[in-house]
Amino acid sequence: MFNGTLVFSSGYGVADSESATNVTNDSKFRIASLSKAVTSAGILTLIQNGTISLDDKMVDLIPDLLPSQLLGCEYPSHSTSYSIDDITVSHLLNHRAGFDPSSDPTYWHWNTWESRNDDCLDIDSLNTDYNDGNLAPVSMERILSEWLRRPLDYEPGSDYEYSNIGYQLLGQIIEAQSGMGYEAYILENVLTPMGIDSMSIGMTMPDQRVENEVTYYDYENDFSPCHFPSGTDSQTGEPIFASEKDPDCGNFVIEEKDGGGGWIATAGDYARFLAHIDGTLTTTAFNDTFEYFISNPDAPQYSSYYGHGVFVSAANTDIWNHLGSFSGSSTYFKRVMVDAGGDENVPVIVVMFSNTKPTSSLDIDGSSWTSDRTSTIASVIYDVDWANLTASKPLPDNGSCTPGDTQPADDGCNTCVCTDDEIWVCTLIGCPDDSDQIPRISLWPGKVNQHNENGTWLTDPDGVSGGHPSIKYPSDYGGRELEYCQKFWPTTTQVVMQDNRENLTFYTEGNQVAYNTTKDVWICQTEDGGIPEFDPVDNPPWAGEDEPYSGSRVPGFGMAATLSMLGLVALFRSRRNYV
Image (tube, helix red, strand yellow):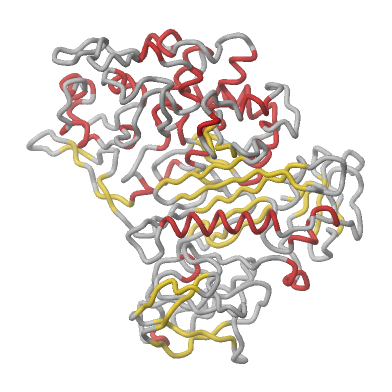
């Protein structure tokens, strides 16, 4: 998003491996904690229409959610003297409400609730209300009510601890004060006025997901007891919780995590949302948004602090960002101001969603995955000469096109279509001759930018190339459970498997040793023996069980990125809506 205009959006990789569906601009992803800014926007509408204020006490806004007293629990007068009566709306927005995230009940399985030894949790009542777990999972309303009975971990307003509980409570405030369901209120009062129609609260079970929603791949292929019982033991009456993949109900219940992490969206629509809440684009939903979203009374204590739903740089409050993740999901956005050659700097927003999330138990550890994503976005933002972007063939002004009209995009490789809203929308992938103008981007999680100091790219270790788990290759490759080498845009040359080697050293950016591997690794080359490149939109199909596999369509990783990834300079030559 460049100064309020969506100039580029594209999908990379696999949305669903079984159907061989690739990620597109219409692909919807779980956005996890990026949902917090959406909830914050809903709170802002209630503040600006006079329903609530930042100083209102939480207990006054959600009286029906407050728990009853319980024998053996000090609630409501805990010996710590910290009271939920002191929590304000501002505290919840800034993660200063007294909740410690070291134990997060919003993720708890029924088995955890049932086995919990806590005098302030009414386990007997839970067993009665949920039929000993046969009616699980526990609703978010009940989770919060039980948790509010427990003592706070610190005095509200005295410290900062990132916590999902606070934003779940904000979602309940929206419901209680508006008289509407949380999702319905946000859609009607926040997103629809922005012209955003792709966003909704996600569903946990695969058969309940919406059209164009991606499939989520846990890189470690972890299984846990599903949160939803699959039946009842005929002898004991106990619920049966079948083991399921973590993203498919074994790790969380996304529809219950609404205010803190429940939304799904396309990358393009989330970028539009951000451009509205930073004030670049106007909306009838609210006004004067920038100061609200960067607000935090304790901000001077931190180099980077949490505003109202976004992280903000204390040194430069124009810089925003937020990470989010679930099992099977990784999300990130960054907002900065750039010099575009005018009198004032203008905002640039980059959004990246993916349908996998590596964790620290792998060679490709979670911290590396996070740093590589943030570094990629930073390089995209700061490597562009924003002040010298010229249009080789400007599009007509928005508002002057006839719906249904088409014309070539500025890059000469793609087509722009005039929408019903009389806006030019261009689906762009970039042209090969732009390849030397931007950083190349790795599509596998972990050690992005692995290359020698001279810029040549190394092959990948088994089990990580392309961001996919290892698969069993056809018999032509010995049935080995190995991966193929990395390819990079823009060439469309096929790659072929060569020999496998052992004891290779892999490098990260700056020629630093990343790690050594003693596992078998396929060494791949192009048919002419050159270094393979990768074109994410030209993935050749599976060649069949009896033929060598030479493509890059492998289960299970996709990514949607908005603003710019490939062919960047060409895309910014005209400031029109590209998706």
